[in-house]
Image (cartoon, rainbow, N blue to C red; front, side, top):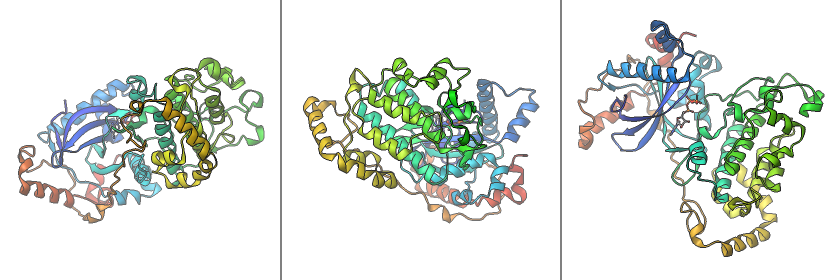
Length: 475
Ligand SMILES: Nc1ncnc2c1ncn2[C@@H]1O[C@H](COP(=O)(O)OP(=O)(O)OP(=O)(O)O)[C@@H](O)[C@H]1O
């Protein structure tokens, strides 16, 4: 419905996702032909107005997505399908105070992602465009998510090295977020994207928080992946293993993310979830696991080695859960994921292989090196054995012949200091270039468009002050 609509220099080609408050589109930059994803986050005030005006209730997810599409379509249509919107200076979003973020909750997601996106395994935001009904977040585009890749493409069933690579990259990204005081709180395969070389990128910071501690039973996240203390936190030491003296009004947030990593490790190795939710009263399987962790070995085809690691992750007591650094080290050195089949034998990562896969987080890499130095000879032997056993054609095509990965080019997008603190009217307006698609080869018009976009960069204060106040939702 929205295909062929133009948003600045981005042509919308298709819708690729939808969530509670927004829609995600695949777009192509008509100036560079590069692909991007644009996440459209609707302002709740404009949503409420729309629902009220049309006498609708906004409970169903499908109904919401359809209504969001309709609302956006009408918005584009009123500007002849060509919107020209100002971009918000990214640095100014990073400077927003807690008060300002409370007034603009959808900017919290953007601010947190901007804060951590220097890490190579986190989806990068390039621009934020503002309009009266929604904020448009321009991000790098990846055509697969981890869920589709695991479940539909069965991409990991035969490749233990790939499992390690993706999982360790994810650990690295999360460790980076935690070091910067950002806790994701919605780690799940749908929120991990993959590029053509099977590198992982964490996205959707919509539920992330800066709170180092959360109250027990704060139900945040997605049910399969949520830690037990977020669902049902009870004081009974005999059923949940948490010592009474450790029960308090708040529990660490980071260990909740680590629990979710454990479920993802099960997804990657077994293509299934262990339980529907970590609720002892409502989920029988989880209830049995809480009483005896050996249940995991009965319901999943996991090796003893993987079982040992999983038990350290899926500790009911958030204080005794494994930390990310140890987790990285243990998963790196694992030699079997399953009891039988292609994942029953996987190579332990040498320090070189580890470096090639996890180079994106220097802290994690440098601190983890000592672990690999010890067992290096043994690992070399294992690798040689592996080489002998496997024909060269079994090496995934995403690796170079020496086993290393293609270098990821990270370009820093800190060119926003060119913004003008413009006091212009920020109402979206139609582009005065008649057909931007047809003007692709015309350098003059391209330059005009570029200049136009540059001039339209604005400081956040221009959105929150004066005449632009009308863009702010009514909280
Ligand atoms: N940068 C991207 N590249 C490609 N696809 C993306 C990108 N960002 C998001 N998507 C797709 O859109 C879906 C929804 O995105 P996202 O999770 O950010 O939105 P959301 O509104 O927070 O959704 P939810 O409410 O389900 O968490 C993702 O699961 C993914 O499939």
